[in-house]
Amino acid sequence: MAHNIPPDGTLLPLMEEFYTIQGEGFHSGKAAYFIRLGGCDVGCHWCDVKESWDAELHPLTSADEIVKNAEKYPGKAVVVTGGEPLIYNLDYLTSELQKRGIKTFIETSGAYPLSGHWDWICLSPKKFKSPRPDILPLAGELKVIVFNKSDFAWAEEHAAHVSENCKLYLQPEWSKHSEVTPLIIDYVMQNPKWEISLQTHKYLNIP
Image (tube, rainbow, N blue to C red; front, side, top):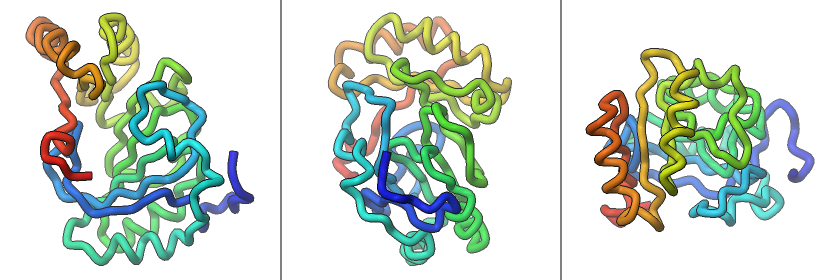
């Protein structure tokens, strides 16, 4: 998949890191430092960061350096995303962040074994590579991207396997949001255990 990445997670292929407002899901509206790792083989055709897929394109970066950069900002929460971040061992990165009082959130498809120490797990399962059954009960939120009508039944399949405290979100796929948002509104009104997640950062025009 990538460079010779040490299995201890002290070096990671960093695509980008930036301080912004979390745009979607349970933590929407909160200041957070985003760490986007390169490398993904899940292959969603509507992915808006396809440049993250090839880990070889992104420099191996010291986890200590990433932690130092995150420490500079007043918002004490980090979102680790990708790509698919669980391709890598995230134990070291997350324990170093938590030692410094920084909360750790992950956004994952759940296709790889869980590593890392997390304050919040956002599971966003993808049809192209199903999540591992052992990750479903650990999710704090289940965020399903709705691209067409068949995604509602698929969302329910996964909702049956998360914990009863897991927050359930349906999020319109951005390129089809005008088409699928009305379907989601109707669905949530009929099935109120679900909530709508919007990509508010796209409306706010921030990263």
